[in-house]
Length: 195
Image (cartoon, rainbow, N blue to C red):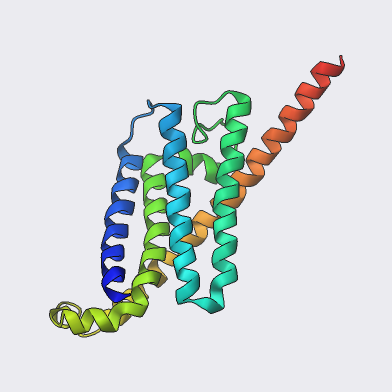
């Protein structure tokens, strides 16, 4: 399992970092299919990592399952809402949405850094149990980390946790805001049909 863990860790860091960078620099143009594909691959890659974490941290399995559901549902409802109202993307924000959600989706740097911090939180949780094997295979890491790689990984987890928690708050706000938009759309369309 460790050999695969090392490869997976490196792949996760590389792919999630590269995925977050375009959020910072991405232009506003792009296809709807590209937006949906990006959202779907992000959701499922995070879900797969959370499923793996349920095996490594069995006492927190229900929390990871809840986080999977929150992530998928909040983005699905938001995407559905944006399609109903004719928006180009679930990332297109009106001025009347909650400030935190508006900042998150209109400032590409904030979006990219929050996504990166959230994913790194999961990656460091994944790496933590494998630190002893890493040190056995790469003793030079003791030199570069002052002999406390486990402490540095723990510190990275603690440093990324506030960003992870912020991302979950944003998911809840996004879900509530999109749900309100869907209900408002239902009222408008049912009222126009009845009159």
